[in-house]
Length: 105
Length: 236
Image 1: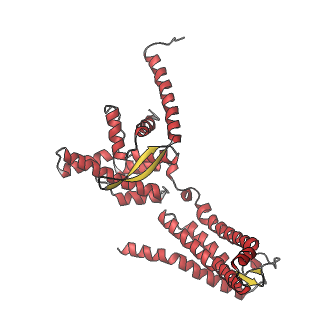
Image 2: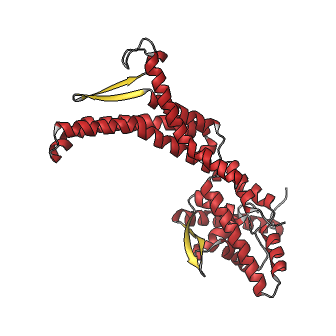
Image 3: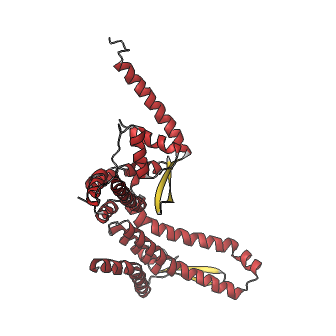
Protein backbone atom coordinates (compact mmCIF):
# COMPACT_ATOMS: atom_id res chain seq x y z
CA UNK A 1 0.00 0.00 0.00
CA UNK A 2 3.04 2.25 -0.24
CA UNK A 3 2.18 5.38 -2.17
CA UNK A 4 -1.59 5.01 -1.79
CA UNK A 5 -2.01 7.90 0.68
CA UNK A 6 0.04 10.16 -1.61
CA UNK A 7 -2.03 9.11 -4.62
CA UNK A 8 -5.33 9.74 -2.81
CA UNK A 9 -4.20 13.10 -1.46
CA UNK A 10 -2.98 14.32 -4.85
CA UNK A 11 -6.13 13.08 -6.60
CA UNK A 12 -8.54 14.72 -4.17
CA UNK A 13 -6.62 17.98 -3.98
CA UNK A 14 -6.45 18.08 -7.78
CA UNK A 15 -10.21 18.77 -7.77
CA UNK A 16 -10.19 21.56 -5.20
CA UNK A 17 -8.06 23.00 -2.43
CA UNK A 18 -8.78 21.69 1.06
CA UNK A 19 -7.48 21.94 4.60
CA UNK A 20 -6.42 18.87 6.58
CA UNK A 21 -9.67 18.04 8.32
CA UNK A 22 -11.63 18.44 5.08
CA UNK A 23 -9.15 16.21 3.29
CA UNK A 24 -9.43 13.40 5.86
CA UNK A 25 -13.23 13.54 5.56
CA UNK A 26 -13.00 13.58 1.78
CA UNK A 27 -10.78 10.48 1.74
CA UNK A 28 -13.21 8.58 3.94
CA UNK A 29 -16.19 9.65 1.85
CA UNK A 30 -14.49 8.99 -1.49
CA UNK A 31 -13.33 5.52 -0.47
CA UNK A 32 -16.59 4.59 1.26
CA UNK A 33 -14.64 4.55 4.54
CA UNK A 34 -12.58 1.64 3.21
CA UNK A 35 -9.46 3.77 3.68
CA UNK A 36 -8.98 6.13 6.57
CA UNK A 37 -5.67 7.84 7.16
CA UNK A 38 -4.42 8.52 10.68
CA UNK A 39 -5.88 11.95 11.19
CA UNK A 40 -2.89 13.52 12.87
CA UNK A 41 -0.34 11.92 10.61
CA UNK A 42 -1.85 13.27 7.39
CA UNK A 43 -0.15 16.62 8.03
CA UNK A 44 3.48 15.47 7.84
CA UNK A 45 2.61 13.90 4.48
CA UNK A 46 1.11 17.19 3.29
CA UNK A 47 4.23 19.05 4.43
CA UNK A 48 6.52 16.58 2.66
CA UNK A 49 4.51 16.84 -0.57
CA UNK A 50 4.77 20.60 -0.27
CA UNK A 51 8.56 20.35 0.23
CA UNK A 52 8.77 18.24 -2.93
CA UNK A 53 6.88 20.93 -4.81
CA UNK A 54 3.74 18.85 -5.44
CA UNK A 55 1.50 20.94 -3.20
CA UNK A 56 1.31 24.56 -2.25
CA UNK A 57 -0.13 25.84 0.99
CA UNK A 58 -1.84 29.12 1.78
CA UNK A 59 -3.68 30.53 4.74
CA UNK A 60 -7.30 31.33 4.14
CA UNK A 61 -10.15 32.42 6.40
CA UNK A 62 -12.92 29.88 6.88
CA UNK A 63 -15.84 30.25 9.29
CA UNK A 64 -14.06 32.97 11.23
CA UNK A 65 -10.79 31.01 11.56
CA UNK A 66 -7.75 30.87 9.35
CA UNK A 67 -6.87 27.48 7.94
CA UNK A 68 -3.99 26.19 5.86
CA UNK A 69 -5.40 25.16 2.51
CA UNK A 70 -3.45 22.83 0.23
CA UNK A 71 -3.70 22.66 -3.55
CA UNK A 72 -1.85 20.73 -6.26
CA UNK A 73 0.87 22.41 -8.30
CA UNK A 74 1.74 21.66 -11.92
CA UNK A 75 4.52 19.33 -10.68
CA UNK A 76 1.94 17.69 -8.41
CA UNK A 77 -0.36 17.03 -11.38
CA UNK A 78 2.49 15.39 -13.28
CA UNK A 79 3.32 13.30 -10.20
CA UNK A 80 -0.38 12.34 -9.92
CA UNK A 81 -0.39 11.11 -13.53
CA UNK A 82 2.73 9.02 -12.92
CA UNK A 83 1.46 7.59 -9.63
CA UNK A 84 -1.97 6.82 -11.11
CA UNK A 85 -0.37 5.06 -14.09
CA UNK A 86 1.85 3.03 -11.78
CA UNK A 87 -1.16 2.13 -9.62
CA UNK A 88 -3.17 0.98 -12.69
CA UNK A 89 -0.23 -1.15 -13.85
CA UNK A 90 0.11 -2.79 -10.42
CA UNK A 91 -3.63 -3.41 -9.93
CA UNK A 92 -3.86 -4.84 -13.46
CA UNK A 93 -0.97 -7.19 -12.74
CA UNK A 94 -2.40 -8.27 -9.39
CA UNK A 95 -5.86 -8.77 -10.95
CA UNK A 96 -4.35 -11.02 -13.58
CA UNK A 97 -2.76 -13.15 -10.88
CA UNK A 98 -5.95 -13.28 -8.80
CA UNK A 99 -8.02 -14.22 -11.84
CA UNK A 100 -5.61 -17.01 -12.71
CA UNK A 101 -4.72 -15.45 -16.05
CA UNK A 102 -1.13 -16.60 -15.88
CA UNK A 103 0.81 -19.68 -16.85
CA UNK A 104 2.85 -21.27 -14.09
CA UNK A 105 5.92 -23.11 -15.37
CA UNK B 1 -4.27 11.41 27.27
CA UNK B 2 -4.66 14.84 25.64
CA UNK B 3 -1.82 16.12 23.51
CA UNK B 4 0.57 18.55 25.16
CA UNK B 5 1.17 20.80 22.17
CA UNK B 6 3.97 22.79 23.81
CA UNK B 7 5.87 19.62 24.67
CA UNK B 8 5.32 18.25 21.16
CA UNK B 9 6.55 21.52 19.61
CA UNK B 10 9.67 21.60 21.77
CA UNK B 11 10.46 17.95 21.02
CA UNK B 12 10.22 18.48 17.27
CA UNK B 13 12.26 21.69 17.34
CA UNK B 14 15.00 20.10 19.43
CA UNK B 15 15.09 17.17 17.02
CA UNK B 16 15.90 19.59 14.19
CA UNK B 17 12.55 19.86 12.40
CA UNK B 18 12.30 23.20 10.61
CA UNK B 19 10.41 25.73 12.78
CA UNK B 20 7.99 26.66 9.98
CA UNK B 21 6.86 23.03 9.74
CA UNK B 22 6.68 22.58 13.51
CA UNK B 23 4.61 25.68 14.17
CA UNK B 24 2.25 24.97 11.30
CA UNK B 25 1.90 21.30 12.27
CA UNK B 26 1.01 22.12 15.87
CA UNK B 27 -1.50 24.72 14.73
CA UNK B 28 -3.06 22.29 12.27
CA UNK B 29 -3.37 19.65 14.98
CA UNK B 30 -5.10 22.09 17.32
CA UNK B 31 -7.54 23.11 14.56
CA UNK B 32 -8.15 19.49 13.63
CA UNK B 33 -8.88 18.64 17.26
CA UNK B 34 -11.35 21.54 17.49
CA UNK B 35 -13.03 20.45 14.26
CA UNK B 36 -13.57 16.91 15.56
CA UNK B 37 -14.91 18.19 18.89
CA UNK B 38 -17.35 20.56 17.14
CA UNK B 39 -18.49 17.87 14.76
CA UNK B 40 -19.07 15.37 17.58
CA UNK B 41 -20.98 17.92 19.65
CA UNK B 42 -23.10 18.72 16.58
CA UNK B 43 -23.90 15.01 16.39
CA UNK B 44 -25.17 15.09 19.97
CA UNK B 45 -22.11 14.10 22.04
CA UNK B 46 -21.29 15.72 25.36
CA UNK B 47 -18.16 17.90 25.30
CA UNK B 48 -16.11 15.50 27.42
CA UNK B 49 -17.04 12.55 25.18
CA UNK B 50 -16.33 14.63 22.08
CA UNK B 51 -12.88 15.51 23.44
CA UNK B 52 -12.11 11.87 24.13
CA UNK B 53 -13.10 10.95 20.58
CA UNK B 54 -10.97 13.78 19.18
CA UNK B 55 -7.93 12.66 21.19
CA UNK B 56 -8.34 9.07 20.03
CA UNK B 57 -8.82 10.02 16.37
CA UNK B 58 -5.89 12.41 16.27
CA UNK B 59 -3.43 9.82 17.58
CA UNK B 60 -1.04 9.72 20.51
CA UNK B 61 1.58 12.41 21.03
CA UNK B 62 4.27 9.78 20.54
CA UNK B 63 2.84 8.68 17.16
CA UNK B 64 2.44 12.26 16.01
CA UNK B 65 6.04 13.10 16.92
CA UNK B 66 7.44 9.89 15.43
CA UNK B 67 5.69 10.46 12.10
CA UNK B 68 7.24 13.89 11.70
CA UNK B 69 10.67 12.76 12.84
CA UNK B 70 10.61 10.00 10.22
CA UNK B 71 10.38 12.64 7.47
CA UNK B 72 13.95 13.75 6.86
CA UNK B 73 12.73 16.33 4.32
CA UNK B 74 11.14 18.33 7.13
CA UNK B 75 14.44 18.91 8.92
CA UNK B 76 15.97 22.35 8.75
CA UNK B 77 19.16 22.95 6.77
CA UNK B 78 20.84 24.21 9.94
CA UNK B 79 20.10 20.96 11.78
CA UNK B 80 21.50 18.95 8.87
CA UNK B 81 24.66 21.04 8.54
CA UNK B 82 25.09 22.88 11.87
CA UNK B 83 28.82 23.50 11.48
CA UNK B 84 28.27 25.06 8.07
CA UNK B 85 25.16 27.06 8.99
CA UNK B 86 26.23 28.37 12.38
CA UNK B 87 30.01 28.04 12.31
CA UNK B 88 31.27 28.88 8.82
CA UNK B 89 28.45 30.73 7.04
CA UNK B 90 28.39 33.86 9.27
CA UNK B 91 32.09 34.61 8.74
CA UNK B 92 31.78 33.92 5.01
CA UNK B 93 28.71 36.17 4.73
CA UNK B 94 30.44 38.99 6.62
CA UNK B 95 33.66 38.83 4.58
CA UNK B 96 31.67 38.56 1.32
CA UNK B 97 29.61 41.60 2.29
CA UNK B 98 32.77 43.61 2.89
CA UNK B 99 34.36 42.55 -0.39
CA UNK B 100 31.16 43.29 -2.33
CA UNK B 101 30.85 46.76 -0.76
CA UNK B 102 34.49 47.55 -1.43
CA UNK B 103 34.06 46.53 -5.07
CA UNK B 104 30.92 48.64 -5.43
CA UNK B 105 32.64 51.68 -3.90
CA UNK B 106 35.70 51.19 -6.10
CA UNK B 107 33.77 50.78 -9.33
CA UNK B 108 30.81 53.10 -8.83
CA UNK B 109 31.82 55.48 -6.02
CA UNK B 110 33.15 58.25 -8.24
CA UNK B 111 30.26 57.99 -10.67
CA UNK B 112 27.69 58.22 -7.87
CA UNK B 113 29.50 61.18 -6.31
CA UNK B 114 29.62 62.90 -9.70
CA UNK B 115 25.96 62.21 -10.47
CA UNK B 116 24.80 63.47 -7.07
CA UNK B 117 27.24 66.36 -7.03
CA UNK B 118 28.77 65.29 -3.72
CA UNK B 119 31.99 66.89 -2.62
CA UNK B 120 35.14 65.20 -1.33
CA UNK B 121 34.24 65.91 2.31
CA UNK B 122 30.80 64.29 2.01
CA UNK B 123 32.25 61.27 0.25
CA UNK B 124 34.94 60.96 2.92
CA UNK B 125 32.33 61.00 5.71
CA UNK B 126 30.12 58.52 3.83
CA UNK B 127 33.08 56.18 3.35
CA UNK B 128 33.92 56.38 7.06
CA UNK B 129 30.32 55.54 7.99
CA UNK B 130 30.35 52.57 5.61
CA UNK B 131 33.63 51.36 7.13
CA UNK B 132 32.29 51.70 10.67
CA UNK B 133 29.14 49.85 9.65
CA UNK B 134 31.14 46.96 8.26
CA UNK B 135 33.50 46.47 11.18
CA UNK B 136 31.12 47.20 14.06
CA UNK B 137 27.43 47.22 13.11
CA UNK B 138 27.22 44.49 10.42
CA UNK B 139 29.03 41.83 12.52
CA UNK B 140 26.82 42.65 15.49
CA UNK B 141 23.63 42.42 13.40
CA UNK B 142 24.87 39.17 11.86
CA UNK B 143 25.63 37.73 15.29
CA UNK B 144 22.22 38.76 16.62
CA UNK B 145 20.55 37.14 13.60
CA UNK B 146 22.53 33.96 14.22
CA UNK B 147 21.52 33.90 17.89
CA UNK B 148 17.84 34.39 16.95
CA UNK B 149 17.92 31.64 14.32
CA UNK B 150 19.66 29.20 16.66
CA UNK B 151 17.22 29.99 19.49
CA UNK B 152 14.24 29.60 17.17
CA UNK B 153 15.53 26.21 16.07
CA UNK B 154 16.46 25.17 19.64
CA UNK B 155 19.91 24.38 18.22
CA UNK B 156 22.70 23.23 20.58
CA UNK B 157 24.70 26.28 21.59
CA UNK B 158 28.16 25.06 20.60
CA UNK B 159 28.13 26.02 16.91
CA UNK B 160 26.30 29.35 17.27
CA UNK B 161 28.75 30.29 20.05
CA UNK B 162 31.67 29.39 17.81
CA UNK B 163 30.17 31.19 14.79
CA UNK B 164 29.43 34.43 16.63
CA UNK B 165 32.79 34.19 18.39
CA UNK B 166 34.69 33.98 15.10
CA UNK B 167 32.76 36.88 13.56
CA UNK B 168 33.18 39.09 16.64
CA UNK B 169 36.92 38.36 16.96
CA UNK B 170 37.59 38.94 13.26
CA UNK B 171 35.54 42.15 13.26
CA UNK B 172 36.73 43.41 16.64
CA UNK B 173 40.39 43.13 15.67
CA UNK B 174 39.86 44.64 12.23
CA UNK B 175 39.86 48.30 11.39
CA UNK B 176 39.24 49.99 8.08
CA UNK B 177 40.29 53.58 7.61
CA UNK B 178 39.78 55.95 4.76
CA UNK B 179 43.10 57.41 3.75
CA UNK B 180 42.68 59.92 0.96
CA UNK B 181 40.98 57.96 -1.80
CA UNK B 182 42.17 54.59 -0.51
CA UNK B 183 40.89 52.19 2.09
CA UNK B 184 43.43 51.10 4.70
CA UNK B 185 42.65 47.71 6.20
CA UNK B 186 44.51 46.64 9.31
CA UNK B 187 44.07 43.67 11.60
CA UNK B 188 45.46 43.31 15.09
CA UNK B 189 45.01 39.54 14.94
CA UNK B 190 46.38 38.44 11.55
CA UNK B 191 50.04 39.46 12.21
CA UNK B 192 50.00 37.14 15.23
CA UNK B 193 48.59 34.27 13.17
CA UNK B 194 50.97 34.85 10.29
CA UNK B 195 54.00 36.86 11.52
CA UNK B 196 55.51 36.99 8.03
CA UNK B 197 52.54 39.00 6.80
CA UNK B 198 53.02 42.74 7.19
CA UNK B 199 50.08 43.51 4.94
CA UNK B 200 47.68 43.94 7.83
CA UNK B 201 49.83 46.03 10.12
CA UNK B 202 52.49 45.55 12.76
CA UNK B 203 52.34 43.04 15.61
CA UNK B 204 50.95 44.94 18.61
CA UNK B 205 49.84 43.32 21.85
CA UNK B 206 48.02 46.48 22.87
CA UNK B 207 46.06 46.65 19.59
CA UNK B 208 45.24 42.96 19.96
CA UNK B 209 43.96 43.48 23.52
CA UNK B 210 41.81 46.40 22.36
CA UNK B 211 40.50 44.28 19.49
CA UNK B 212 39.57 41.43 21.82
CA UNK B 213 37.87 43.91 24.15
CA UNK B 214 35.78 45.21 21.28
CA UNK B 215 35.03 41.62 20.18
CA UNK B 216 33.93 40.72 23.71
CA UNK B 217 31.55 43.70 23.80
CA UNK B 218 29.99 42.69 20.46
CA UNK B 219 29.72 39.08 21.59
CA UNK B 220 27.98 40.02 24.85
CA UNK B 221 25.67 42.44 23.02
CA UNK B 222 24.68 39.68 20.60
CA UNK B 223 23.94 37.08 23.28
CA UNK B 224 22.60 39.27 26.05
CA UNK B 225 18.98 39.44 24.81
CA UNK B 226 18.83 35.63 24.58
CA UNK B 227 20.21 35.15 28.09
CA UNK B 228 17.69 37.67 29.40
CA UNK B 229 14.81 36.01 27.52
CA UNK B 230 15.79 32.56 28.81
CA UNK B 231 15.90 33.81 32.39
CA UNK B 232 12.48 35.36 32.04
CA UNK B 233 10.93 32.23 30.49
CA UNK B 234 12.49 30.09 33.25
CA UNK B 235 11.12 32.25 36.04
CA UNK B 236 7.71 32.70 34.34
